[in-house]
Image 1: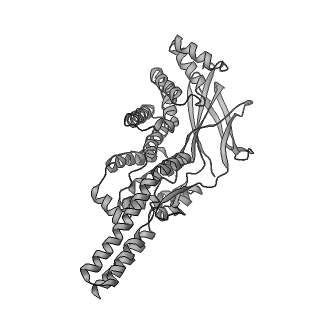
Image 2: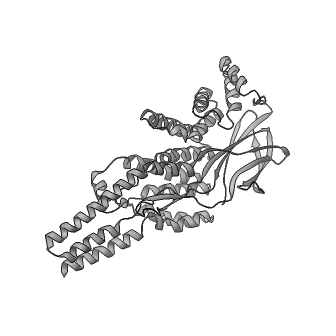
Image 3: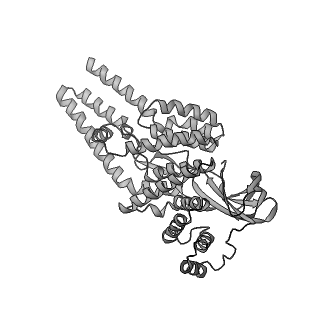
Amino acid sequence: MAALRQFLLLASVLFVSGCAGYASRIREPRNYFESGNYEAAASKLKVLVEANDNDKLLYLMDLGMVYHTARRYPEAIKVFLEAEKLAEINDYTSISQEVGSVIGNDDAKFYRGEDFEKILINVYLALDFTLSGQWDSALVECRKVNHKLDLMISQGQKPYERNAFAKYLAAALFESQGELNSAFVDYRQLRKWRPDTPYLGKALLRVSDRLAASQEFAEYQATYGNETDFRLGKDRGEVVLILEQGKAPLKGPSPHMNLVPIFNRRNYRSQSVILRDGNDKSKSVKSQVLFDIEQTAINELNLRLAAITAKKLGGVAAKVAIGYGVEKATDNKLLGLLARYILLASDKADLRSWTTLPATLQIARLTLPAGRRDLELDMVDRSGGQTRNIARWTGVDVKPGKILFLSYRTPD
């Protein structure tokens, strides 16, 4: 009976821990975040970070996102730097944790982060350094992004199919700080990866013109012949809007096998935005998608589904075998059945992912007369309808020949 009581106690512990995974713990702070209550979201997340469990990387990324969206850039930078370090520490395979995840569930493993999530940590660091005016540090993060992308490519992966935003941001930041050779390298790389990259023609023409790269300039003129107004002179500057649109998908158990996760798209109204010059209504541009986080997450999980399913089926077989082992060792059929039940009931799909991310990262570039300008933002929804003036920046200082960065996240 003592052994039976011990198993029942273990069963209750496993059930409680199974119900208290990341997906349930993040729900309340994520709801606070999405309702705009950033202080409450940060307070809840700091408690979760301090617990120092296997999901600490996720809580750090979520906390960094809360601070970023609240425009508390110094705090966001501090948290994202910690997340970057932890991602590097967790980026190895622990044999003991792998065995534990087979016998128990995947929550037994440190969350390592998806490749695109690790890149986005540095992207957000570059953004937050930029938005707080720390240009040198922003460029350091851009170089880290480029190094990580190059390393992934050398290892046979293809992150360039989904990280055009990271490369574009690096190029635009280099250009804004006068590092034209670095900007030119990144813009040209983007053209190889994705020739239809939005807002690329003007950038290539402008940078190649300033570098007096006549051969490349002639080539770009032939390709982007309709882009004639590309120079920034003494009387004009440019605004680059970084748009975080929509909501990242959430993982849930697959209806076909509840031990396997699938991503479920979330409801949101927005599709893009229109950035307008409030002083001259004729000057406007529409944001364009450079990185579809939603589709990337779904695609990457789908590529791993066969391996995840095989591991789960192997785990089921292992748990059944352990139950039979308990039955044989104790000569007690009831204990064997209970052991199998506990082990199988404690298993679940791994529902962990960076859920506070937007659905897409977009960009808009608008050339404007130098001086103080009022900028307005309209939201375009999925049906094509527009909501006017969802945001407004007054007295934006557009400097001659300079590039100014703004950011906005859609509220839906």
